[in-house]
Image (cartoon, rainbow, N blue to C red; front, side):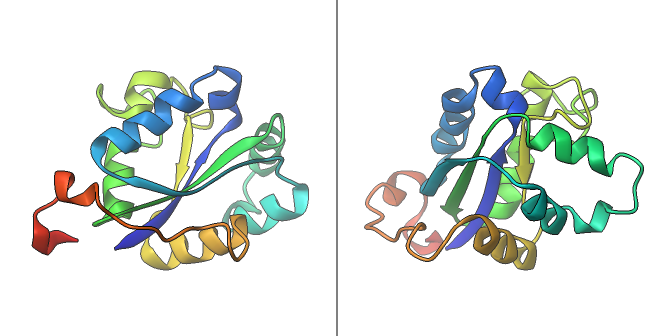
Length: 153
């Protein structure tokens, strides 16, 4: 069973969309195994967005991500990373297809509702970055029989 990180960005918090976005993931069949609201720091964002440090918009992204707390989610499911990214839609909200989270709620490249891990290695690193030991839970998966065939989970 794959786990991935989703951050509900400050634009989501400001627009009171937290529950609605989480519900979209849950209705799909992904399971929340970690959830917390947190205020991001400059240090954490320097690490998280290190791959963008030389871009002219780097500080703007950090300022945006520190404007309110974010909600960090650890989601679990079969092919969770791919499923989350499909649900999220194109990074640019103006280009995201209707029916995707960004397509339904975003008009921006930056203020695009969610951050979603893009690969298993990235997800593992990001989950460690945003969740401490003991903050991601393992518990019985009874509901999975309603979402998957027995041999899929």
